[in-house]
Image (cartoon, rainbow, N blue to C red; front, top):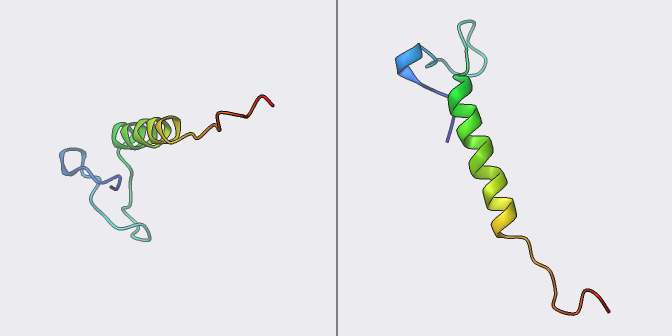
Length: 49
């Protein structure tokens, strides 16, 4: 996953002078990351002991 999006000309690599990020793509990546964290949270059954 990356922040490239040819539809908004966000296609250049990170250190390129014309580098730009498509904010909508970054929001999607953030949502996927947060959902992944929520789904992989492990709480032992005896955590209250």
